[in-house]
Length: 335
Image (cartoon, rainbow, N blue to C red; front, side, top):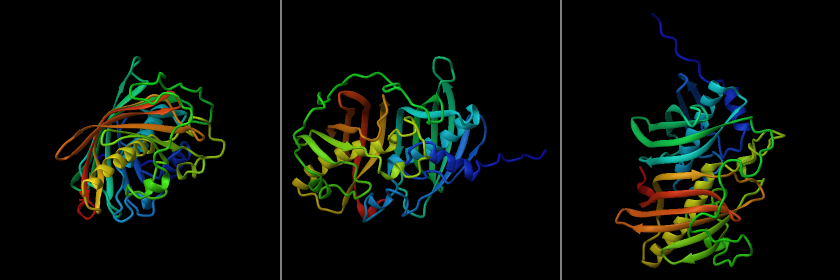
Protein backbone atom coordinates (compact mmCIF):
# COMPACT_ATOMS: atom_id res chain seq x y z
CA UNK A 1 0.00 0.00 0.00
CA UNK A 2 1.33 3.41 -0.95
CA UNK A 3 0.82 6.19 1.55
CA UNK A 4 -0.01 9.50 -0.08
CA UNK A 5 1.11 12.59 1.78
CA UNK A 6 -1.59 15.22 2.26
CA UNK A 7 -1.20 18.20 -0.05
CA UNK A 8 0.12 21.41 1.47
CA UNK A 9 -2.18 24.38 1.78
CA UNK A 10 -1.78 26.29 -1.51
CA UNK A 11 0.19 29.50 -1.35
CA UNK A 12 -2.85 31.40 -2.59
CA UNK A 13 -4.87 30.15 0.40
CA UNK A 14 -2.14 31.25 2.81
CA UNK A 15 -2.10 34.69 1.20
CA UNK A 16 -5.90 34.84 1.43
CA UNK A 17 -5.62 34.01 5.13
CA UNK A 18 -3.27 36.93 5.67
CA UNK A 19 -5.73 39.25 4.02
CA UNK A 20 -8.71 37.93 6.00
CA UNK A 21 -7.58 39.43 9.32
CA UNK A 22 -5.05 41.86 10.71
CA UNK A 23 -1.68 40.11 11.02
CA UNK A 24 1.62 41.51 12.27
CA UNK A 25 3.61 39.50 9.70
CA UNK A 26 3.39 36.40 7.49
CA UNK A 27 3.91 33.97 10.37
CA UNK A 28 3.66 30.77 8.30
CA UNK A 29 5.26 30.23 4.88
CA UNK A 30 3.79 26.77 4.26
CA UNK A 31 1.10 24.72 5.94
CA UNK A 32 -0.15 21.11 5.65
CA UNK A 33 -3.42 19.89 7.15
CA UNK A 34 -2.68 16.28 8.11
CA UNK A 35 -6.13 15.38 9.40
CA UNK A 36 -9.19 16.89 11.03
CA UNK A 37 -7.13 17.36 14.20
CA UNK A 38 -3.55 17.96 13.04
CA UNK A 39 -1.71 20.61 11.07
CA UNK A 40 1.94 21.38 10.47
CA UNK A 41 3.43 24.72 9.44
CA UNK A 42 6.83 26.19 8.72
CA UNK A 43 8.20 29.71 9.00
CA UNK A 44 11.62 30.97 7.86
CA UNK A 45 12.71 33.73 10.22
CA UNK A 46 13.63 36.79 8.17
CA UNK A 47 15.35 39.94 9.37
CA UNK A 48 13.24 42.04 6.99
CA UNK A 49 9.88 40.75 8.23
CA UNK A 50 7.53 43.51 9.47
CA UNK A 51 8.24 44.51 13.09
CA UNK A 52 11.44 42.44 13.23
CA UNK A 53 13.85 45.34 12.76
CA UNK A 54 12.53 46.93 15.94
CA UNK A 55 12.76 43.86 18.20
CA UNK A 56 16.19 44.17 19.86
CA UNK A 57 17.72 46.02 16.87
CA UNK A 58 21.27 45.13 17.91
CA UNK A 59 20.48 41.40 18.16
CA UNK A 60 17.29 40.61 16.28
CA UNK A 61 15.22 37.65 17.48
CA UNK A 62 11.74 36.42 16.64
CA UNK A 63 9.45 37.71 19.42
CA UNK A 64 7.86 35.09 21.63
CA UNK A 65 4.49 36.67 20.92
CA UNK A 66 5.05 35.95 17.23
CA UNK A 67 5.59 32.25 17.97
CA UNK A 68 2.03 32.38 19.31
CA UNK A 69 1.02 34.21 16.11
CA UNK A 70 2.55 31.41 14.01
CA UNK A 71 0.50 28.83 15.90
CA UNK A 72 -2.60 31.03 15.43
CA UNK A 73 -2.13 31.23 11.66
CA UNK A 74 -1.59 27.48 11.38
CA UNK A 75 -4.75 26.76 13.38
CA UNK A 76 -6.73 29.13 11.16
CA UNK A 77 -6.06 26.87 8.16
CA UNK A 78 -7.08 23.79 10.14
CA UNK A 79 -10.37 25.53 11.00
CA UNK A 80 -10.97 26.42 7.37
CA UNK A 81 -10.33 22.81 6.32
CA UNK A 82 -12.88 21.52 8.84
CA UNK A 83 -15.51 24.28 8.83
CA UNK A 84 -15.08 26.03 5.48
CA UNK A 85 -13.59 29.41 4.67
CA UNK A 86 -16.66 31.12 6.12
CA UNK A 87 -15.39 30.20 9.61
CA UNK A 88 -13.16 32.37 11.75
CA UNK A 89 -10.85 31.40 14.64
CA UNK A 90 -10.19 33.73 17.55
CA UNK A 91 -7.88 33.11 20.53
CA UNK A 92 -9.96 32.72 23.68
CA UNK A 93 -7.42 31.58 26.26
CA UNK A 94 -3.71 30.82 26.47
CA UNK A 95 -3.26 28.05 29.01
CA UNK A 96 0.54 28.03 28.93
CA UNK A 97 3.52 28.82 26.73
CA UNK A 98 7.16 27.93 27.42
CA UNK A 99 9.83 29.59 25.29
CA UNK A 100 12.89 27.36 25.26
CA UNK A 101 15.17 28.59 22.46
CA UNK A 102 15.61 31.86 20.61
CA UNK A 103 14.83 32.09 16.88
CA UNK A 104 17.12 34.30 14.83
CA UNK A 105 17.08 35.34 11.16
CA UNK A 106 17.91 32.30 9.03
CA UNK A 107 16.36 29.81 11.45
CA UNK A 108 13.30 27.81 10.47
CA UNK A 109 10.40 27.40 12.86
CA UNK A 110 8.58 24.06 12.49
CA UNK A 111 5.17 23.74 14.15
CA UNK A 112 3.02 20.67 14.79
CA UNK A 113 -0.44 21.41 16.19
CA UNK A 114 -2.90 18.89 17.59
CA UNK A 115 -6.47 20.10 18.18
CA UNK A 116 -9.41 18.78 20.18
CA UNK A 117 -12.98 20.05 19.96
CA UNK A 118 -14.28 21.34 23.29
CA UNK A 119 -17.08 23.60 24.44
CA UNK A 120 -20.73 23.18 25.28
CA UNK A 121 -21.65 21.64 21.94
CA UNK A 122 -18.29 19.98 21.36
CA UNK A 123 -17.53 22.09 18.32
CA UNK A 124 -17.53 25.81 19.16
CA UNK A 125 -14.02 25.81 20.64
CA UNK A 126 -10.72 24.10 19.89
CA UNK A 127 -8.11 23.16 22.47
CA UNK A 128 -4.72 23.17 20.75
CA UNK A 129 -1.27 22.00 21.78
CA UNK A 130 1.63 22.98 19.57
CA UNK A 131 5.20 21.70 19.49
CA UNK A 132 7.47 24.38 18.01
CA UNK A 133 10.99 23.43 16.96
CA UNK A 134 14.17 24.91 15.52
CA UNK A 135 15.72 21.88 13.87
CA UNK A 136 16.22 19.28 16.61
CA UNK A 137 15.79 21.88 19.36
CA UNK A 138 12.41 22.56 20.91
CA UNK A 139 11.82 26.32 20.67
CA UNK A 140 8.45 26.50 22.44
CA UNK A 141 5.53 24.50 23.77
CA UNK A 142 2.12 26.15 23.38
CA UNK A 143 -1.27 25.23 24.83
CA UNK A 144 -4.21 27.48 23.98
CA UNK A 145 -7.91 27.52 23.17
CA UNK A 146 -9.62 29.07 20.14
CA UNK A 147 -13.21 30.16 19.67
CA UNK A 148 -14.80 29.24 16.33
CA UNK A 149 -17.01 31.99 14.92
CA UNK A 150 -19.08 32.23 11.76
CA UNK A 151 -18.09 34.68 9.06
CA UNK A 152 -14.78 35.57 7.43
CA UNK A 153 -14.51 38.96 9.06
CA UNK A 154 -16.19 41.11 6.42
CA UNK A 155 -19.37 41.47 8.47
CA UNK A 156 -19.90 43.84 11.37
CA UNK A 157 -19.47 42.37 14.83
CA UNK A 158 -21.43 43.75 17.80
CA UNK A 159 -19.13 45.42 20.31
CA UNK A 160 -18.21 43.21 23.24
CA UNK A 161 -19.41 40.01 21.60
CA UNK A 162 -16.39 37.98 22.62
CA UNK A 163 -16.65 38.03 26.37
CA UNK A 164 -17.98 39.57 29.53
CA UNK A 165 -17.10 43.13 30.37
CA UNK A 166 -16.25 44.66 33.71
CA UNK A 167 -13.29 46.50 35.06
CA UNK A 168 -11.43 43.50 36.48
CA UNK A 169 -8.95 43.69 39.34
CA UNK A 170 -6.07 46.12 39.43
CA UNK A 171 -7.41 48.44 36.73
CA UNK A 172 -7.16 52.21 36.88
CA UNK A 173 -10.87 52.86 36.52
CA UNK A 174 -12.12 55.74 34.40
CA UNK A 175 -10.78 56.27 30.91
CA UNK A 176 -10.72 60.03 31.47
CA UNK A 177 -7.61 62.26 31.35
CA UNK A 178 -4.50 60.57 32.76
CA UNK A 179 -1.37 62.05 34.28
CA UNK A 180 1.60 61.15 32.09
CA UNK A 181 4.70 60.19 34.08
CA UNK A 182 6.94 59.25 31.16
CA UNK A 183 6.59 60.30 27.56
CA UNK A 184 7.61 58.33 24.50
CA UNK A 185 11.15 59.75 24.30
CA UNK A 186 11.96 58.44 27.78
CA UNK A 187 10.52 55.03 26.94
CA UNK A 188 12.69 54.77 23.81
CA UNK A 189 15.76 55.35 25.95
CA UNK A 190 14.93 52.56 28.40
CA UNK A 191 13.73 49.39 26.63
CA UNK A 192 15.58 47.74 23.72
CA UNK A 193 12.79 48.12 21.16
CA UNK A 194 12.45 50.43 18.18
CA UNK A 195 9.87 51.33 15.55
CA UNK A 196 7.68 49.58 14.58
CA UNK A 197 8.08 47.11 17.47
CA UNK A 198 8.01 49.69 20.26
CA UNK A 199 4.41 49.26 21.43
CA UNK A 200 4.32 51.54 24.49
CA UNK A 201 3.33 55.18 24.00
CA UNK A 202 3.21 56.57 27.54
CA UNK A 203 3.57 55.68 31.20
CA UNK A 204 0.48 56.73 33.15
CA UNK A 205 1.27 55.36 36.61
CA UNK A 206 4.33 53.94 38.30
CA UNK A 207 4.92 52.34 41.67
CA UNK A 208 8.70 51.79 41.66
CA UNK A 209 9.61 48.11 41.40
CA UNK A 210 6.01 46.92 41.80
CA UNK A 211 3.49 48.24 39.27
CA UNK A 212 3.24 50.22 36.04
CA UNK A 213 0.36 51.43 33.88
CA UNK A 214 1.12 52.15 30.22
CA UNK A 215 -0.91 53.18 27.19
CA UNK A 216 -0.82 52.14 23.55
CA UNK A 217 -2.98 53.84 20.91
CA UNK A 218 -4.04 51.48 18.11
CA UNK A 219 -4.13 53.18 14.70
CA UNK A 220 -5.18 52.03 11.26
CA UNK A 221 -1.75 52.96 9.85
CA UNK A 222 0.11 50.18 11.70
CA UNK A 223 1.91 47.47 9.69
CA UNK A 224 -0.52 44.76 10.86
CA UNK A 225 -3.27 46.34 8.74
CA UNK A 226 -1.17 46.84 5.59
CA UNK A 227 -2.19 43.60 3.81
CA UNK A 228 -5.80 43.52 4.92
CA UNK A 229 -8.29 43.03 2.10
CA UNK A 230 -10.42 46.01 1.05
CA UNK A 231 -13.82 46.01 2.70
CA UNK A 232 -12.63 44.11 5.76
CA UNK A 233 -15.14 44.21 8.60
CA UNK A 234 -14.82 44.71 12.34
CA UNK A 235 -13.79 41.14 13.11
CA UNK A 236 -10.95 41.25 10.59
CA UNK A 237 -9.79 44.62 11.94
CA UNK A 238 -9.23 43.36 15.46
CA UNK A 239 -5.77 44.16 16.78
CA UNK A 240 -3.72 40.93 16.78
CA UNK A 241 -3.58 39.29 20.23
CA UNK A 242 0.13 38.61 19.69
CA UNK A 243 0.79 42.35 19.51
CA UNK A 244 -1.43 42.95 22.54
CA UNK A 245 0.68 40.49 24.56
CA UNK A 246 3.89 42.10 23.30
CA UNK A 247 2.64 45.59 24.16
CA UNK A 248 1.64 44.50 27.67
CA UNK A 249 4.97 42.77 28.23
CA UNK A 250 6.95 45.84 27.18
CA UNK A 251 5.41 47.69 30.10
CA UNK A 252 6.81 45.04 32.42
CA UNK A 253 10.20 45.29 30.72
CA UNK A 254 10.17 49.05 31.23
CA UNK A 255 9.39 48.71 34.94
CA UNK A 256 12.02 46.02 35.44
CA UNK A 257 14.80 47.71 33.47
CA UNK A 258 14.34 50.96 35.37
CA UNK A 259 15.00 49.02 38.58
CA UNK A 260 17.98 47.17 37.09
CA UNK A 261 19.59 50.33 35.74
CA UNK A 262 19.13 52.06 39.09
CA UNK A 263 20.88 49.09 40.70
CA UNK A 264 23.85 49.29 38.35
CA UNK A 265 22.88 46.56 35.88
CA UNK A 266 24.99 47.27 32.75
CA UNK A 267 23.58 47.84 29.30
CA UNK A 268 23.77 44.97 26.85
CA UNK A 269 21.16 42.84 28.58
CA UNK A 270 17.69 42.16 27.21
CA UNK A 271 14.50 41.07 29.00
CA UNK A 272 13.29 37.83 27.42
CA UNK A 273 9.82 36.33 27.86
CA UNK A 274 10.40 32.78 29.11
CA UNK A 275 6.87 31.56 29.82
CA UNK A 276 3.26 32.71 30.10
CA UNK A 277 0.17 31.00 31.48
CA UNK A 278 -3.50 31.69 32.01
CA UNK A 279 -4.15 34.53 29.54
CA UNK A 280 -7.81 35.20 28.79
CA UNK A 281 -9.03 37.41 25.92
CA UNK A 282 -12.40 39.00 26.69
CA UNK A 283 -13.03 41.36 23.77
CA UNK A 284 -11.50 42.81 20.65
CA UNK A 285 -9.65 46.08 20.10
CA UNK A 286 -9.84 48.08 16.87
CA UNK A 287 -8.17 51.09 15.23
CA UNK A 288 -9.04 54.22 17.19
CA UNK A 289 -9.00 52.42 20.56
CA UNK A 290 -6.39 53.02 23.26
CA UNK A 291 -5.09 50.11 25.29
CA UNK A 292 -4.30 50.67 28.96
CA UNK A 293 -1.98 47.99 30.33
CA UNK A 294 -1.49 47.31 34.04
CA UNK A 295 1.58 45.21 34.87
CA UNK A 296 2.47 44.06 38.36
CA UNK A 297 5.75 42.41 39.29
CA UNK A 298 4.58 39.84 41.82
CA UNK A 299 7.97 38.33 42.58
CA UNK A 300 11.64 39.00 41.93
CA UNK A 301 13.63 35.77 41.74
CA UNK A 302 17.23 34.84 41.04
CA UNK A 303 16.15 33.82 37.55
CA UNK A 304 14.01 36.86 36.71
CA UNK A 305 10.60 38.28 37.49
CA UNK A 306 7.06 36.91 37.67
CA UNK A 307 4.40 39.35 36.43
CA UNK A 308 0.62 39.52 36.13
CA UNK A 309 -1.89 42.13 35.03
CA UNK A 310 -4.70 43.27 32.78
CA UNK A 311 -5.44 45.28 29.68
CA UNK A 312 -8.41 47.65 29.49
CA UNK A 313 -10.05 49.71 26.76
CA UNK A 314 -11.61 52.54 28.71
CA UNK A 315 -13.42 50.80 31.57
CA UNK A 316 -13.83 47.54 29.63
CA UNK A 317 -11.64 44.56 30.41
CA UNK A 318 -9.88 43.35 27.25
CA UNK A 319 -7.48 40.70 28.56
CA UNK A 320 -6.18 39.21 31.79
CA UNK A 321 -2.66 37.86 32.15
CA UNK A 322 -2.40 35.33 34.96
CA UNK A 323 1.36 34.90 34.99
CA UNK A 324 4.36 35.79 32.87
CA UNK A 325 7.98 34.86 33.59
CA UNK A 326 10.75 37.04 32.14
CA UNK A 327 14.51 36.66 32.43
CA UNK A 328 17.46 38.93 31.66
CA UNK A 329 19.99 37.64 29.17
CA UNK A 330 23.07 39.21 27.58
CA UNK A 331 22.12 40.26 24.08
CA UNK A 332 25.04 38.38 22.56
CA UNK A 333 24.31 35.24 24.58
CA UNK A 334 20.84 34.36 23.29
CA UNK A 335 20.74 30.82 21.92
